[in-house]
Length: 333
Image (cartoon, rainbow, N blue to C red; front, side, top):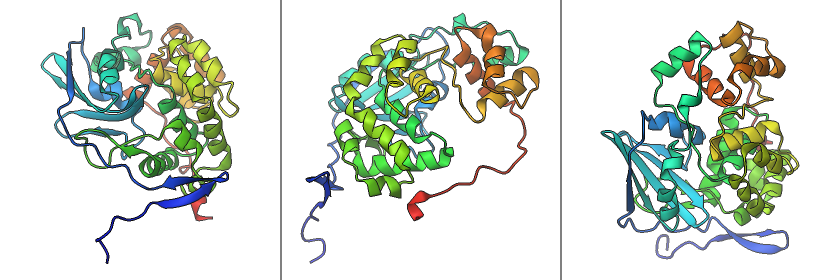
């Protein structure tokens, strides 16, 4: 009888109600997409600009293909959408599919850094001057979407990046929906806020997400509309709104607005590695803490996040003095 009938969706009980899990949403037919051409006013490196939106090499919402195209599957205010961006000559072409296609193309220039002003950065260290010269296509992206940056940032709290990337990949593939249009295989749009709220506790556990991070995400998605409103605020005010959610602190809010707002001055504090990297690059101090890092970045006030990005791109990082942080998979317990 195998194969003669479509499998029935698995059902589970969540908070007294029933919700279909793993039922699967059929991928939309690959019809013609909407197209927009845009010419940037300076050098543009798609990998550098859009790279921060990628959460690991197997991110189901992001794909870079051998032809140089970058694909994004995202949930817009108008619905799910898939965006393909490719550079040609001195211009960029965006092609989009799904209910969110028009929204994605309308905001394509901001996504590619049109609202960013690289000329506002004045290097005061030789290392940063050389790195900017070698990476002229660096611009700060502005996605215009808060939740899609907030949730993976919460997953990255106090764990290794491998653990966070794995959790994001498993949860999006299981509870997201297939990307609209002719997207590369296994690309998915992240779940809607209500779907995040209905994920059973044992599925968070299987993905390696502890109760503290899962609870923070559940609190965030309950006020998703209010958090998305923060995209129209200045970065400082947006961070203040995000930090009203218990479990969202300065590290998480900074990581979010750097992507959602293209915030050039919102430097990440509370990071395990960044202070030592900045201290080593600018002053030879591998033991620098947040206070020392902020003091070293003070000459770049207004552009501190860009300065940190350039330091990371320079490749000048201190050598390891201890083994990597051990990885613990709580899903095995």
